[in-house]
Amino acid sequence: MRQASTTHLTRIAEIDAHEGPVYVAGEDALYFTTLPRRDARGVPRVAIKRLSLDGESTVVRADANAANGMTLGRDGRLLVCEQGTPSTPARVTALDPASGEVEVLVDNWRGLPLNSPNDVVQASDGAIWFTDPSYGFLQGFRPRPAVGDRVYRFEPASGRLDVVADGLDKPNGLALSPDERTLYVTDSGANQEPGSFHPDRPHNVVAFHVHPSGLTGERVFADISPGFPDGIKCDADGCVYVSSFSGVQIFSPRGERLGEIALPGVVNFCFGGRERNVLFITTDTAVYAADLAAKGAATRQGYPPGSSSPSRRRGRRCCHRRTW
Image (cartoon, rainbow, N blue to C red; front, side, top):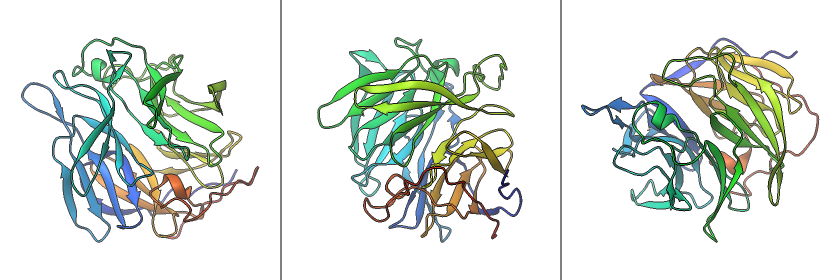
C-alpha cells in the first residue's frame, strides 16, 4: 500500500476555519465558513470568510444563517448550505462574494422545511446535489424534522427538487467522481448528539451509480476508522479523500486504502493551488496545506470549466509525495 505523507504539513494561517473550504484560482484565495459561536440564546453564529493566500483575511458575510458546506457554482457564485436557526429557514443559496447578494435556491420540500443542509456539489449539467441531515435539531438550534435525512438533486433551470437517497442515517459530505458516474456520500450516523460516537451506527462512505433518473447501486465503499467521516473530495484520477479523527484518509477508486495525511482535528478540505496539487485543510483553529503529486478535478474545485480536463483513466493508483 502506498503511503501518503504523514508529516511536514504547513500551517498557513491561524484562523477559525471550520467547514466548506473553496479555493478560487482566479483570486488565489480560500473561502470557508467559520467555527459556530453560540449567542446568548444558544443560536450558532457563523460567518463566511475569505483568506487570500498572501495572508489577508476578510469577512464576506458576517451572519450566514449557520452556514456549513459550500462549493463554487459554475457561474462563479458560492453555493452555500445554510442550516438555519429557530427563526430562519434552512436552505441552499447562491452568494455573490463580490456584492454580498444572496439568492435562495431551495428552502423546502413540497412545502415542508428542510432540516439543516450540510454539503453541496454542482455537476457539469448544472444539477446541484446536497445532503440534508437533521443535525440542526440534534444540536438544539432547529425545529423537529418534518422530512427525513436525505440526499437531494436540484435542477436550477426547472426548479425541480428530487429525493435521490433516503436510506442513510446521517448523510453528510458528498463528492462526484471525475466522470460524474459515481456519487460518494459520507454517512456520519455514528455521531448523533454533540460529541457522541455510536460504533454500531454508520461511519462509512457509501457510493451510488449516477443514473439519469437518480441514483442506483448503493454500496458501502469504505468504512472509516477512527471516528466517523465528514469531508470528502475526489482527485482527477478518481481517488477518494475522506476526513477521519486521525487525518485525511485516501482510497483508490476501488475502495483500497492507500494512505493517510495525518492531522488529528481535521474537519474538511479542498484542492487548490495554481496546479491543483495542494490540499487545503481546515481544523477549526487553522488552515493547513499539503503538497501532493495528485491533482484535484478542475471544474469542481474552483477552476473555470475547460481550464483542464479531469483524467478519465481507470485503475490508476493515486500517488502522493511530501514536498513541504
